[in-house]
Length: 311
Length: 300
Image 1 (cartoon, each protein chain N blue to C red):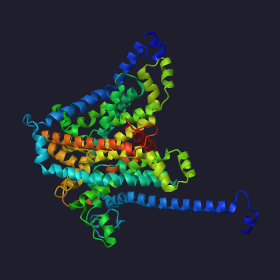
Image 2 (cartoon, each protein chain N blue to C red; image 1 turned 45 degrees about the horizontal axis):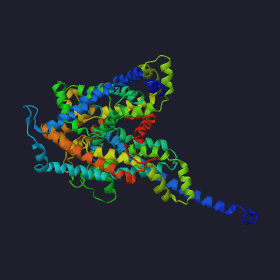
Image 3 (cartoon, chains in turn yellow, red; image 1 turned 30 degrees about the vertical axis):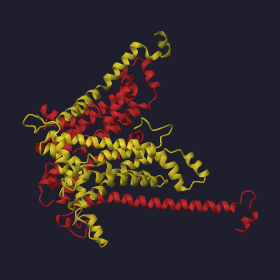
Image 4 (tube, rainbow over the protein chains, first blue to last red; image 1 turned 135 degrees about the vertical axis):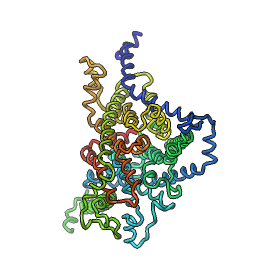
């Protein structure tokens, strides 16, 4: 007891206990909130997913019925997953690459960088309904600017949001408007790369491409990784633009899984079924995230050791 | 040229070095010009939708549906703003949005800064495990808890009130806690020790040392939660049923639902009004805000 005291003088019994009590007091809002708004609802939704509940009559336990129906007897589930994955496959890589290219260009000591950074970042702060309305008007097949510009080039533009083929590409184009968010994170990462690494590469005779592949990419790969995980998760939660712009149409061609879940819960009042759907989404996201994390040792470089335990 | 070559220093031929340097600086110049052009074109692309929105918002009814597009209206019809805010009770919605947002911002900053202090400054058994749980909730899709939180609020009798949109923010949010903790960690520990010697308790250290030094990070959290609350759509859509209680986003969506043949000029006018607070806040605080956004992204 005495030896411990002499080695760690600031961690004596009562002081340490006081600090511990203080920790739990300060953290209590989140601890309580975690139980009420996260852990509790998660357990409740797991239980609900095994029941039939329409809010009015008491819930009935139905075992795995919801899951069986979801996987075997509801083509809209597959449609919504197809739509969401198609969107994610289009918007995530495209967004990551174009944000990175933009950041690389900005990092060339271009003049007025602060002004451009601001301009590119604005769309990221005004998400939501007004933006959805604006893009509905932009994509308007007859009077919108896109088809007007195409017409000026002699091209007849597609029906965009009214076309089963073009509705998801429309959403992908719209998502590119907000690459300013990931872009400023890349930019800060690029500015944090020590200059001596480039000088060393130059001495070794590296050209611009070799420097990019051997210095820049490895150094910012953790940021690419972070952005990739976050944007995949975000794709599975898309709701506002789908609800406002298309309501999932035409012919369910933009029925994002987030929208389908909302409809089940708050329009058809199938609370149990919606909960089962939510768990399916959760499992898919978990799988995708694990996939990205598992693959990360092959392409993410962490300074000072392996990437274990990061993120 | 000849003079240079005759007087050239034997060890370092300046003619060659100069030519090399010139070529290098020419390439550098070309690179910079190209980069600037692409950036300018991209920035124009980002701004065009805004210009289109502004232009539509002041157009007379007939000119909205003209092909090819008129970018500059022949006549400014500023009454679109008045018509739009009269068609839906826009200012009522604005008041609701302001009320909810103010309470959300206060709650987020207060609760998250307290919790972040615990994680950054106080040692306790189980702290690291709790922090990992906190981080993993960042990746939890909101859908999983959507239905059961709704049922909680229904049980509490809070449907069609502002409570479901405000109260949860008084329990700290993982993202803000994480952001603030990262910032608190950069403050020197010696300050805490000095305060302790002066007889400060833990709350004293939090309120007199850490908080005053963390103004930029607190401002970032305030701005983040402002944007999130102001733009929130799904929550208000689920929880608010009475028209008078709508927030601006729900009201705007309602606008388009009730109109046959959308009056795009009025709709864009209302959208402009809805965006103004965000843009104004962003311009006033962009330096702090961008630094904060970067802080969370980089340390992820």
